[in-house]
Length: 249
Ligand code: BV8
Image (cartoon, rainbow, N blue to C red; front, side):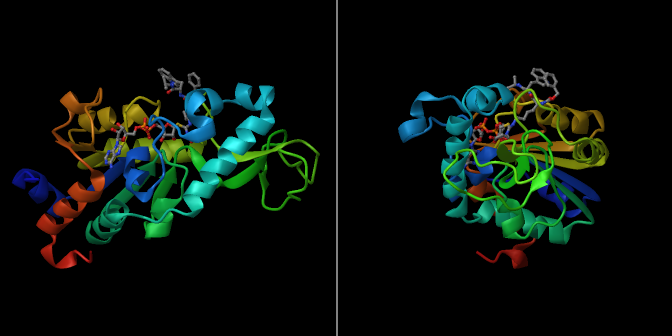
């Protein structure tokens, strides 16, 4: 794909880069996106229905098993060239913030440093009643397992639909989106709030905003550049054009 030279100049001279990623950046690592049809047992369920406090209250075993299934996929996944490209950009620019909606931990595994996990992390657990982190629990016969402190259910440490995001993480994400001169929106359907509002804040702050996505999104027409295609192929092209010597793959 031909990368606009104006984008490359902006990236090379950028003082502050902010990046928002969604499930699409992990697709080529084998982690299904949120809106891809789910497979097998989960085909008949919609993630948006399962990722809610109500679903966990009504059917804790089903929701727990859905996360166990996803955790299994994530543990087998490795970062792809899109994740690696963001590590290189972070090394090259003065100030870089990675805001991710993903809960798969692949950015950290790739080597990204300044990561804001808006929606938590599927590999972390917390008590559903006390809302405190749980590092160890007896994975006995009961599903979901019980909190060793209070006997409530253990749940994944992720933000469900209808739940508030962590205030400090959200504040840092708004600050990064509102102060950058270059914003990338990568692999997200730009539908879930408040993440979907962040690229618009970057536009308000007169940043160049670049969307990299397989399909059209509600944000595409507002982006400075909307590059259609896979993040795992477009991001390495951008890095190669900006810093030819840096491509390691
Ligand atoms: C909140 C964790 C206060 C769990 C997730 C304002 C207006 C309307 C509604 C609301 C609003 N404010 C709040 C809401 C309610 C709700 C919301 O946004 N609803 C929407 C859907 C209408 N938001 C909330 O509840 C948030 N809480 O704001 O609290 C509040 C509460 C209630 C009411 C008001 C205020 C909490 C949202 C967090 C939900 N938790 N994840 C879990 O993962 O199990 S969100 C979940 O969706 C994932 O994190 C996922 O990342 C995220 C978004 O999806 P995407 O990442 O975009 O993935 P998706 O599959 O959609 O798209 C992938 C894209 O990649 C596609 O476009 C595809 O084409 C592309 N792609 C695929 N392959 C590739 C690719 N692109 C490039 N390369 C490829 N190879």
